[in-house]
Image 1 (cartoon, rainbow, N blue to C red):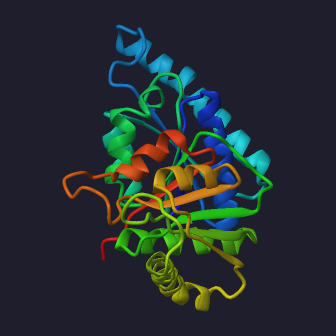
Image 2 (cartoon, helix red, strand yellow):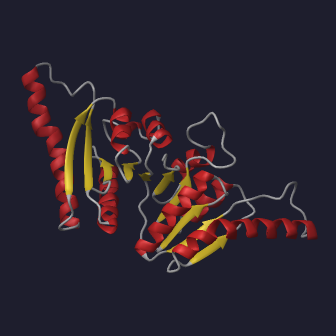
Image 3 (cartoon, rainbow, N blue to C red):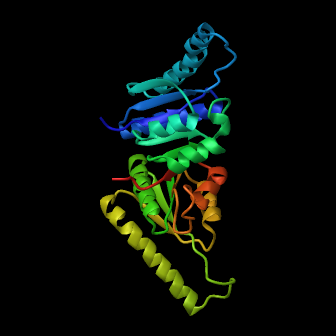
Length: 281
């Protein structure tokens, strides 16, 4: 069976926006949708087993039931599996990610893992997930554009593969951004600077070539802004339906599970952000 799209829900508005995005993605990719609600370790105010059972059967199952209804109303015929689990949120979600095509989470929420999503839980899930993770903060639509960061690293290659698939499925234009800077202070155009830019452009074409050959239906636009990657990608995200980056690029620190660029874009992206790492064979 194909790996499902997994979405974490907690009943908050942003978690529901993540749910809508995930349901659309599952329908688009013809995959099942797995809806996961994580019970916090200290469950509400119940002090007896009977009280805890009542809360679980009413409050938390209500969150899951609402999510299932929303997904099925938006996409009739979509295979939806609701899951109610307890434990440490990051550990539960990372275990779910092991068998997911994509893990989808809202940027913030109320209670459970949602309220911590830009803190320790989010960083653990995004930094250690074996599957791509999409963080849904600002939902945008209608741009028909997928933006992807490229730098030649293995993580960037994985991001390019994911972005091309998404652009192909949605009929969107793919904007490949390779942010680079001149080695030194800005200066008037020179032969050396022109040669360096041509070298960077040639490298970008080389990274894109195999995927362009496999996906001739995707319109590709190459962008080489003379700017930092965070600024360039955040700016491009304002005109995109999805921003895709590798979990760590050539400029990342080897001691960090999540690179500095992807870490900053968790806060600055103006559209859903997909963070992708190479699959372990």
